[in-house]
Length: 345
Ligand code: DOR
Ligand code: ZN
Image 1 (cartoon, rainbow, N blue to C red):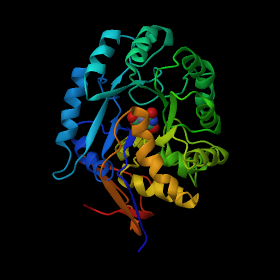
Image 2 (cartoon, rainbow, N blue to C red):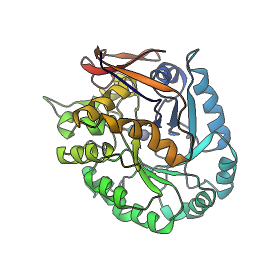
Image 3 (cartoon, rainbow, N blue to C red):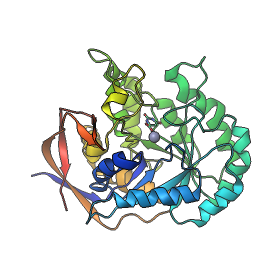
Image 4 (cartoon, rainbow, N blue to C red):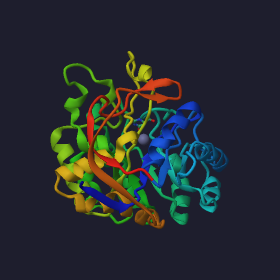
């Protein structure tokens, strides 16, 4: 039996929602990961420390007995966020970053930022206290092709941010292209990126395989094969600027199989299996621990996890659907198989 033992990994980009949905998805993550950076795009957005602390309690209440899982909270950046909010966040041991959604870029991003200049003083405060800025890096202009939104974000906004804030830790979340991988690799040390399992496993054909595939629709969109290969290359290279962030984003089946389907892929259930397959296929299993368990905490200035996880190379079936708090949901690779499974306990 082939096994792989690693420092317990963390997920540096995760959506767990709220209420009944929260209760059914948190155990999937807690089984594999010690910590996760929790996205604040609830309705209303998690825009203050008080809201983040209350949300953290609800997440902890959903962690099954005997599992040790810590949610790392983030604040949703709005044009009403103040430097004072940032100082409060910096004083709170449970808030680890601020999430920047360009207004309208994705699910519940309506309260995001329209004009970057309006949040400039807030970014300055974040730089002063070294509170990381997590970016959904896409522009939303209707004249920009949806497949080019990330590239134009880099050109118009990220280049400027990188020049203006040399001491602000910044993470370009869920990168999807070779251009983004190159930009981050060649950028300054305060710039890093997360990479999802789905952007490493799939190219954009997956959205149209034999028909329209809503369960492969996410934002930023999955791109061409050449981009997928570039992402695999950087993720498996051992470069500490790249680390694991699933962007697992559950939506009920009906909300995706709809005439206006929601963006988001639920990968949390088999997240470590998916990443392990990618690294195995790239003949880079020796680089998995860095990507999944070391680079993230090192960038955030947090300790690496003291415990370990063992993955067994054994096929496991992925169910056709899972329960999202009383409604069905469709996990990534539903009805298929994964090659690795974490050992329980
Ligand atoms: O596909 C996505 N789903 N991308 C995002 O940026 C948000 C997420 C969600 O919250 O559903
Ligand atoms: Zn996300």
